[in-house]
Length: 391
Ligand SMILES: Nc1ncnc2c1ncn2[C@@H]1O[C@H](COP(=O)(O)OP(=O)(O)OP(=O)(O)O)[C@@H](O)[C@H]1O
Ligand SMILES: [Mg+2]
Image 1: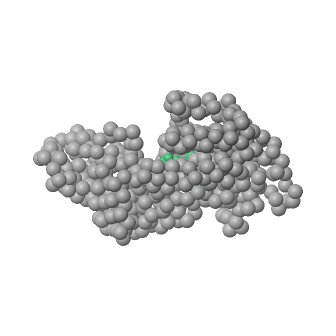
Image 2: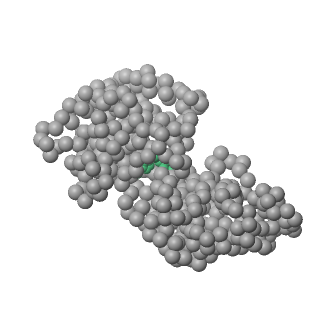
Image 3: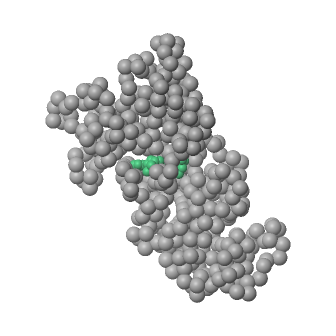
């Protein structure tokens, strides 16, 4: 876990003043934690380091880091990302956002699940891991692959700040489907269940005149009918072409949404539907509804899962080479790998900063190749796909 790693990282940091890269990496790490919604961890990272500096060197952190700390305490809105970090959006504008390194095993697992789905055996794919580990990015990559395989991909994200209506991630994804669909097809696919689904997708009342309101929509019976209607809708809709529904940030999902996922996990095997559920498995610790849902769905034969760990050192080398070749070096790779533990969010933010500001000379000096075999990227395994074409 990162908080533990952060402490050892800070403790070994006695030469801090003489190492401006580390000060900047601390700032970057604080920023990445803060932007991942981990304000307390960001502030802890600062306090750990400050205590060590005062104890060992009798000095305070530098002005830049102190100001950053103050801004975090005040939750300064300037610290928020504005459209920089993308979550299942088309990637590509920012430096490095279109790049994906590593994750071959997970992608193969997801691609395999997609092939099962195309063959008529629906799957639920659970993607879990700590903040910033790359769940959304992987889901985005699967979405791209699935579109190339002719599937229709829709996305729903849970709303973490609270106040979203029940079934929010389902509402978003089904709404995208409804918008993408021809009305006649839609009416046929909804079938008699349209009236049950309309309370959560009110646009159906406009699209399909004469739709009756269900009686006692809050009752358990109505909820069961809603679940059944959605299952039948997905079954029919996916007969035309395979459907991929990505439900992101499910750790923040409302209880009814999780129940619906449980219900569908049992029905999936006979549909051309891939449900991808991405969620943090720490921070926040999964709540009761999520834990119950997971315990239930992992027993279903349609369920597959991947728990994401940090990128490998070879992945880190590859990432730097791809997005900032001018600063790539074995020494920088090892520093970044050690400091970020392969967390892609920390890695991408750190590389962005270093590419902008330059790598401090003490790191670059270690990097000067003494031997041609010492060139950047030499630590990549020889089996790496040649598509990168640069090693
Ligand atoms: N394998 C990878 N290669 C390159 N960049 C990556 C990789 N995985 C993730 N990233 C980048 O790292 C950042 C964090 O990834 P992402 O948003 O997918 O994390 P997450 O696990 O969804 O985090 P959260 O729990 O906060 O939603 C993004 O900018 C993403 O583009
Ligand atoms: Mg995410």
